[in-house]
Image (cartoon, rainbow, N blue to C red; front, side, top):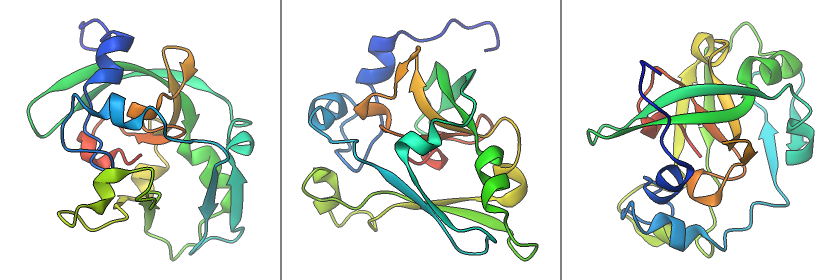
Length: 174
């Protein structure tokens, strides 16, 4: 990634923005350690011809690839991360967006018991984010399922997060 080495697993998993747990980047790992990422399902609906609910195991049938992306934060820090995951366009091809669809909207889990940061009224929960359909279909847009050859750790958005190399970190919803 532009000649910079990948950050270490330790760095990547111990310095994060994950407001669903806390705004303290260095406390995310501790506060997320007991988060239960299984069982998990993802519902795809709206302007699609084939709405579907995927169990996490179903999503792992998509070809897993490794991509090294720089995660950039608006707070002026970045990391080089070796993500594993699948191209979002593969999932979109299965659900077949209608020609009238222009965007893909993502919504986080709302679980104040597991995610104490959601008790704060500083942000509207659950967090939502979106991409234009052409961005979502770009081959570099990844649904990350892991990093460094391991399943995605809790502090990084287990079991899934969006990874889009040309967007700032807040757009890569967990």
